[in-house]
Image (spheres, rainbow, N blue to C red):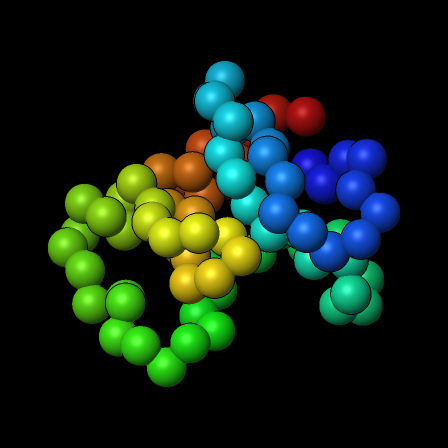
Length: 79
């Protein structure tokens, strides 16, 4: 998923034919990891409606959630 990435950074992965921006973490052991949830400020930006959790919100370099629909699509993807 984090192909051609040689450091931790925001990049696009393709989910259901669409480019989805994600943070690829190459610093955590046993990675690379796709960060599906990132909360790095003290703000209450995660108090949101259900539809926003379905679709995802935020910026992968800051407060971010990839979205339940994207997680479901990736979890059920055939390799």
